[in-house]
Structure formats: structure tokens, C-alpha cells
Image (cartoon, rainbow, N blue to C red):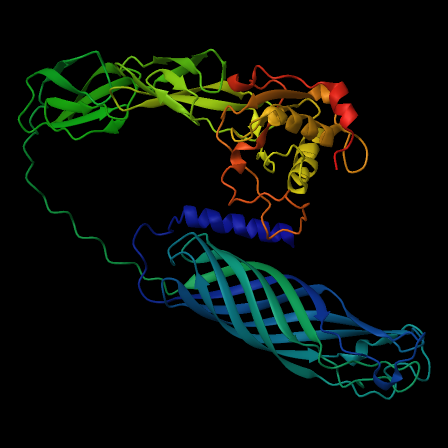
Length: 610
């Protein structure tokens, strides 16, 4: 079947591509009648099978069956082609329809040699006109199908008293049919042709008056509601009549001979020339044509690298904006059916953005120092001079000098700090193209000496009161313990009103007592290594600006009688001990450089001051 469909499709394609007529180019007049005698083969199949057992559905029992066989068909069709593409036809088809039944439960078989008589009517839709040699078509129509059981041919393969057809009245069944199909007509001549058809005839399955469900084991039955497909493939001959010869075409009117056309013009394009062979982007290039004998009505067409430009005469202005490399210019001149061309070319030079490299020296500087920036900018051949400008991610750039003074560091950091600053230099050429380069410089910051609040003392007293002890125990001890490479400098003062022989060394005693509180290692006193403590006895010298620490009356610290010092005591700021923490690697302030190691034996004899 598949091979027959492929052949039909191929023939249809040929007929559409080569619709050669059988009577010239003119169509026939009036309807054309045809008689088609055909024969072929029919394949019969069922679909939509219902439950064949009904109430007798028993597990393990053979349900029985019914099968239609495949057999030859023959028939006749009468056609009327009343339109260029559309016709109608009536037909009669005779076909054998053998049926094999299998009984319910017993598995016996009975064969019925039935017949099928079909009368049909349908329109036919052609893909080519009536005068074409090959005429593929499609059709759809209705028919009436007489199914004749032809009971005289019934044969039971295993006769029994209950075998079909004993006691069964087989009857002819008429069913409506819907059919559709495709085909090909071949007009061999005006009177004779060939025809090939493939159709599917769709109807209800005939049951020949058999019972719908079995009533006992061994019964033959025929379920209702199934669909029968009778697929037929036929071929035959066609006899045609009614063809009328179209009237002859009128004789052509004699015309006077037209005058000979004028000879084509003779002209030439001698050359194309550009006003520059190399230009930079943005410049316009003028192209001129030198020509001989070009008619005034000639058409000029210009292209640059295959793209047309807006020019219609012997001169063209070519824009170079956005272009680079070789530009091929072609001029085409057309006049009187004659075409001449000429070519030339020019080059648009490179206009790439500038490239920038950055050098910096030195690449590592101390905070507050400067470094020299050396930018190198290289422009393209069309870029011209390149201006450079440099910026820093932190700090300040003045021209080509980087100043690190404004780089921010943590002022309370105990260790050296470092920051990487990025220097960016941007170059801009005369065409506005830009390019950038970067370099980095490391800025380092050494730790700085850190001053705490001053310890203040009662008038004429060298005792470290409870307020001052809290500062030494809670702040100084914690910082010195967490930073073992730090040094503590104690600068002691006395008020100028603390005079007399008894108070001459009061500033020294205040420094010794302060060191004893930090190093005694008994009671509340920690055990700070005295080698990390230095002392500077300032006497009544004012020295640095005072930073007195007053506990005030709002705290819970209780003092001995006469040991509480308040902010109202205006002379207390001169009875003080300065506390300086010097991290390792930090610069010692000039005022502290004369500090001396603490006399450890003196401090140890003091123990932990009360």
C-alpha cells in the first residue's frame, strides 16, 4: 500500500510540474462525459470492537471472533466534467466479502462467502484543468452498501448440532457508507484514458441478523456498533465523449515593421582618482571619474566595499567616519543598455584608543612622603598628541607627584600599618579616544606614642589614690599585657607651691609609687616587668599640656581622708604623673628621649602601695 501511495504522489507532482494538454493550449468547450471500467483489490478491517460477551464474560473461556477477508473488486463509474477543475460521478462496485466466525467457548469455525454491492455518488476535485494530460484528484462522497450473506456458501469446519448456521436466518444488510480517496487520471487521447484510485469506504459492520451476544458455549454471534473499513485500490480504462473543438484563434493582424533600434552608445570611463590614498577616520575623500562620450541621460551608481553611497554624478564624496582599512570604490555607468565600470581604492588609517603604562618611584613610602608618577601614553597613527591625567584611590596627586599625607590610618593602632594605593592615569588623544593604565604604591605608617590621662595627687602627697590606681590597674595593665613589646614612660611633676626640703623629691616619689603599683606582684598590684618602664622626673617644669583624670563624686570609688582630688582643685593639674605608651617601632617624642630606666631596687622595696 505504501509503495502505491508513493507512486501516486510522484505522478501527481509530475502532472503539476508538466500540465501538458492533449489538444494544444486552448480548453475544450462544454462538459466532457466519461465511462470508467475498473478492477482491483480490497482490504477489509474492523475497528471499535465492543464487549462481545455481555453477561457471558467468563474468565478462561474463548470469547469467539469474527474476521473479514481480502478479495478482488470490480465496477463501473459514470463521470461528468462540467467545470475546468470540478466534476461529479456515479458508480457501482461489486466485491467479494469472505467472513470467518469462531464460536464462543468451543473454538469451532464457520466460513461465509458474502458479497458487497455498493452504489455511490460523489464530487471530484482535480488539481489540473480538463485539457491536461495528468489530472491528480481527491474525492469524498456517500454510498449505500448491500451486504449479502450468500448463505449457500456457508461451511462449518466442525459440524455440530449447535454449529452456525443451523436454525439461523441470515439476512441481507444495507448500511450507509462515507468514503474518501485520491487518484490520478491520465488522458492518453481525447477519447481514451487511464484511471487509478485509492479509497477508504467507512460503514457499520454487517451482522447478517446474527445474535449480538452468545447465549451458550458453541454459539456464533455478531456484535453491533463496530466500524468496517474497506480500503480498495483500483485501476481501469476511461472512455470519453462530448469533447468540442474550441474555435480557431483569429489570424494575427499584420503590422508594419518597426524601425531598427539605434546603435548602442559608445563611451568609456577612463579612470577614477581619489584626492588622498591614506586618510584618518572622519576625513572625507573626494573621488572623480575621467570619462569619454558619456550620454547626458546616463545613470551613475557608486559603491564603497559593496555598499551604495549617496552620489549620482561623476564625482563622489566618501565619508570615513567609523571606517578602517582598505576601501574599494566602484563606479558603474549605464546608458542605452551599455554598462561600464571603473574601480579605485584608498586606506583609512588606524584610529585605536591610546595605550597607557604607569610607573611610580619609589613603590613603597612612609606615610606623609611623596612618590613620582611616570605615565607613558602611546597614541595611534591618527590619534595625535595624548594628554594624561592621574588620580589616586587615596591621597593626593599633583601633576606627576603623589602625596601620601592624606592617606588615613588608625591613630590608635599598636602595630605598623600599610595601605596599597592605586594610581590611575588616563590618556586622551585628539580624536577623543581614551585609554588607562594603573600602578600601585605601598604607604606604610609606623605606630605612634600614645598618651593616657594623667594621674593626679593630693597636695604634698606621693600616694597613688584609689582613682589613680583604677586607671593603672584597668587600663595601663591591660594594654601592657596585650602588647608585650610596648614601653611605659612615667613623667612625674610637682606643683611649684610644693616647696621646701621635705617636698624637693616629691615628683620622684610619685613616679616610684606609680611603678610599684604596676609591678609589686602582691595584693591588688600586678607584676609588670620593670625593664619595660622608664621614668622622667620633670619637677615643677610644666612640660606637656595636662590631662588630669578626676574620678568625681559620681563614682563609687572611696578615698582616704585628704586623698580625693576634684576638678575644683585648680592646682591639681600640676601635681601629676604623665603616662606614655611607646609601641615597638614607634618614634619616641623628643620630650621623652631623656627618660631613664626605673631603679628596680627602689621600687621593689616599696612593695604594693596601700
